[in-house]
Image (cartoon, each protein chain N blue to C red):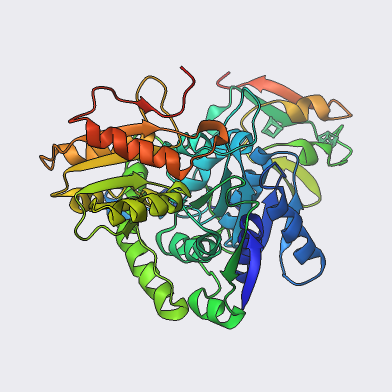
Length: 384
Length: 98
Ligand code: SF4
Ligand code: SF4
């Protein structure tokens, strides 16, 4: 059924269709409506789940960890400062190999206090061992929650679904809401072999000597590497049932392109306007959207950029003293492929500053006019 | 005491490893009693069997058998909580190895 849904409600509907069993969350702008709607759904008896009200995001993730350890399907949602408060437990969930799914509404980090979007909250969680998706519309929000559980439960890793604050979270779009039967067929009940079970007692996360610690890290990394294949496979299963196609990357007018805008999140959709306009003028340009940040699809990005003349990486985030974060990672991915195409790194739209087609035209113009970048960051829209 | 410790499993190769950092069996091979410097000893002449020590022991290393509280020295880590909580002050703390 087609419905008008804001991004936040697309999350709640996705979690409900996934038949989550435990929800533990703390409200934070711009995520609040996710939790509001879920608490109503549970209170109305429309979802057989335990809704745990907690005093902080640290506790929300702790409750999800407990629930997931017993084999329950656990869900939470947060944003910015809330995600940062969870940080310790993000490591715990991932190294504990717990298939929790979390929606994070990308909001810039304070101070100055802010509620508007950029990606520094979730990108600061890069090394916690979570799978990270960056989505670009509300359909993808809903679908990626369902896909996320399927994937998480296959590879035993938690999944973070990131969406832009307000641009998606509070914006209504037409969303195809799948039938429950179809979702049930795609996502059967979760019954893991490894779980807390009073009949078969074991200790979880106990003291691990240096004799044995490293292999757990090796296995975690291997699972992450494997999950690239599993993402492709799971997206294939999803497409068969629901008819919508997703992957590690998304390409737009890339086939014969010479120039590439490399994007993530909703900027990718705004970029389509720019690419269409430039194509009309004969500029061979396309978009490579990075949908999966961890595991990082370095090989796949290198393959997509092979033979291109220039690429323009657009980051709504920053690693202070370095560059845009996607830019840095993409540059690293090309080095051992012997690829040396001019790769420009733009930082734009921090703290939710609007990114319009005019700004994106400016980015392409800059890239066209310069042979190679001379700086790690080309700042867009800073009042200098 | 009817207690048989579980087997300690050694993780020699990757294939021995559990999915997540979890023990392969229960933790009854993990003798926290080896940490103990001080040993709680119950004076049964004064003990009124109130169960306070049983309730407070964090390990829990106090068990009830034949209607009496007993210390399981495999696991008693010698923290002294029972000693300080006993209302009859009938648990003495004795130095180990003396
Ligand atoms: S000393 Fe501590 S561990 Fe030992 S029996 Fe008393 S309370 Fe339990
Ligand atoms: S607390 Fe003291 S009196 Fe009570 S059962 Fe234990 S040893 Fe006996």
